[in-house]
Length: 339
Ligand code: NAD
Ligand code: UD1
Image (cartoon, rainbow, N blue to C red; front, side, top):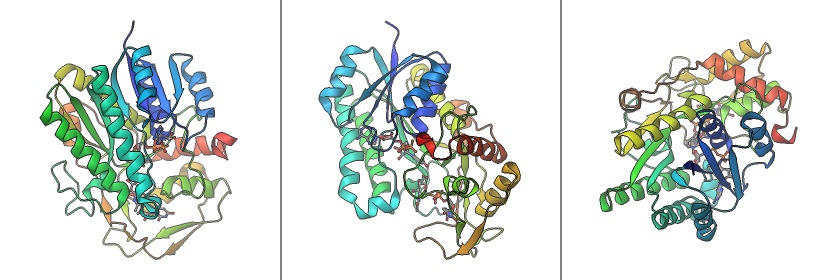
């Protein structure tokens, strides 16, 4: 039987794009997702893009028996673990839910993998583990510090994976620290569909552009950055997806665990992103300058040299392309998967 890749959280934003990239590269995929933050309609869209080269299991990753059944029924040789809750503000209001879901699911998954003798895993971490960075661009060796419960769950899972590698060298682990994923598949069939009011900048901009929100609040214009607005490392979700393929290839070929930043290496300000989006979409984005958002840092962008050297991977899409694809997705699907 052809080996396959288990994707937890594969109905979500990054997981669905990665599933497409893996299938396009010829891999068979099994997705497990409890759909707590995604729509079952994603699966129809994946079928339209890739046919039936995947299986879907609706279950919680904390359910060890459901995982055992997957490992028994499918010849899984690697796992990509996206499943998790990701809203910073929510994690501050409901820390136990975040620890239970994010840490609990990772423990459950690693135990099931061990039982099944599958010890190759790619883990979704975040630039949030760098806290308020002392330097930019940020290398992987920078000090780690969580500033909220969400970030702490990522650090705990990273630590767990490091301890596991020390205890048993058969584990092959790739910890990928994403910067700011944006954009959508070029088909416009899948994309980011946040429920409720978006927390993040790009979905907020696209919802203003499509007329669902009146205006964008720009948080802070007095940062020590060239135009005073916050600077981030936006990365096209299709580049990010390709980074997972490169990480899996690395683990399979080199059998060596890695921790790598996935970003473009370029900082882009809120103002630059808004201006680029307006140009690409051909419409103004109404906005107002308001106070800084608490917990935000001035600038955060990646040192990407390790990803280039170790994985032979680098981001290809520029900010205009990110805006173009995000806009195509939003304008074809004004209310996300409910459209
Ligand atoms: P998402 O919410 O779109 O996808 C996560 C998926 O996991 C959802 O489909 C959800 O239903 C599922 N899920 C959550 N808990 C589950 C559980 N216990 N069992 C089964 N399924 C479960 O989020 P995303 O943006 O695709 O993020 C994927 C991963 O990348 C997350 O771990 C997130 O923390 C991390 N990450 C995301 C970003 C970002 O900006 N989007 C940045 C850095 C890191
Ligand atoms: C946020 C999370 C971070 C997570 C990352 C990627 C917080 C405090 N941090 O980071 O943990 O890893 O998303 O998912 O939530 N902005 C506006 N107006 C808006 C929204 C955002 O001006 O309506 C600005 C922000 O101040 C920031 C930039 O846009 O300067 C990007 O914000 P956002 O998309 O929320 O990402 P991060 O703050 O990098």
